[in-house]
Image (cartoon, rainbow, N blue to C red):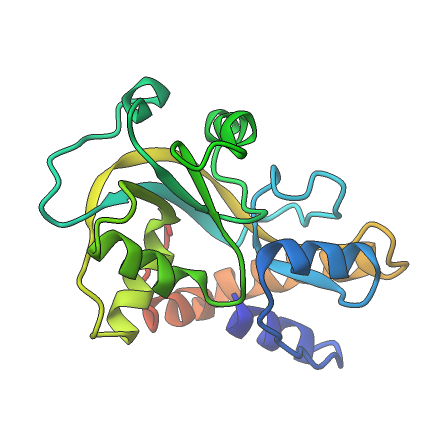
Length: 209
């Protein structure tokens, strides 16, 4: 998404500066107009933000476990007796988000990670069997494991949700509507020329991802 945004906005004279913050802080900084937008947002993450019409792709939220676990995710009832590890401020699915809100003060059921690089920590916690399952986007997990060979691959125990994923802009920023329109026009152009598929393929993603 960073590569796509840089290419699209460069054509309109904008430079894209990417900064890596924890997700909850990123949303807060955008709402304070200290950054222009956030990358990888579901509409449930920031319903008050300005979203382009065209998504960047599709988020597929998986539930991951220790490689030797036999547990399968079959809806919220299957989380009974399990500790779910999640990242602070993320939206996963309407039902998972409600579950997290209901049990965020119960560390035996929901464990919330914060910080700028939580995925590596989550994988270590899974490997050490200190938690039962971790929610993460499939493409993000695949890319992380491809780039960080020292982590034991977790086991996918089921898909909790699929939804469009976007770059979203702060509603309080006067140029957010313009940025969203530029992104839509640029995505259409990259798709028409085939350039979008080339960028996605470099990350191991298909047209539908």
